[in-house]
Image (cartoon, rainbow, N blue to C red):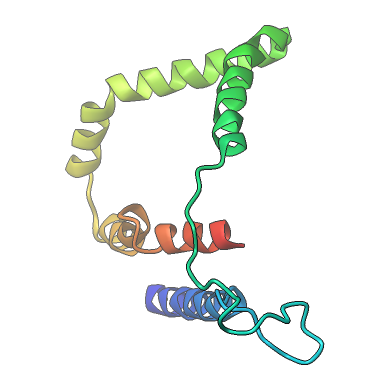
Length: 138
């Protein structure tokens, strides 16, 4: 059962990467055709690509950081409760991490080993990173 799910997942991922790879292909050289807006000759067209730092791009980082830092000032009571719960649960789980791991190891079974073996590639980035990369390209 796990093999069927895994093979289906791999086939879908391979198909997605294959389709995404060809759909984002670009050429640095414009196509020269009779009706092309690029009517320059090969000697007129500069094929080198200059790398310039875009100041607006870096200013966006500053404004985003500012927005992130200032955003809690506009939160309502329910937002603060949600943030407190998430932070508290995260801190609590972090402090109990070793105890949770010990308990899981002590209560291992063939079923839990099978689930763990199936889920392991998702945790080490083998499937998640290509998926995230595909979403980034999209």
